[in-house]
Image 1 (cartoon, rainbow, N blue to C red):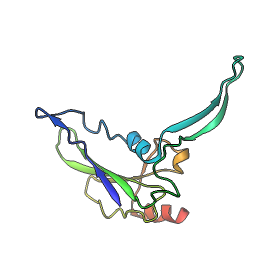
Image 2: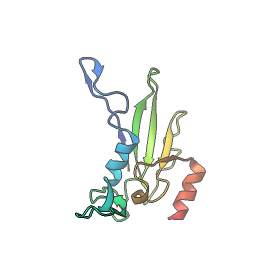
Image 3: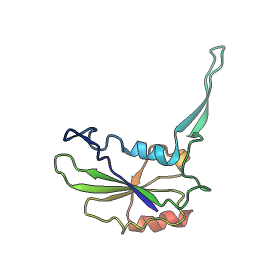
Image 4: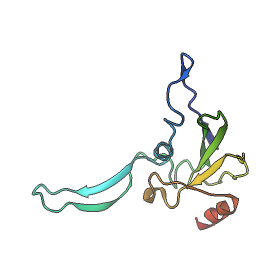
Length: 140
């Protein structure tokens, strides 16, 4: 399954939000994998703050054991000042069946994946092509 999102809110003939305002890559990341969580211990005596790592808070929607049927989330964007549309497809790291990049392969379309496990790459996405899709699937 792949969901396609598009911000088409128009009021009195004008767009309410700037292009992509509600659908930035960071917001797609949060929607798919949840908030980033940073673990700190701050002692009451004012001594050294200790860092215990980061990851994802409990609100993660897509996990290795949940919703693996979601292959990707695509966002339909409009190129500023040009009016041309293109798709950015954000692939689910945990998808049981990855969406082939040939499905959305328009001239301006792009496919993005997490560079590593979502808990270790909040907000990060990298572009990839068909040959890298095979490489990513084989690493799991």
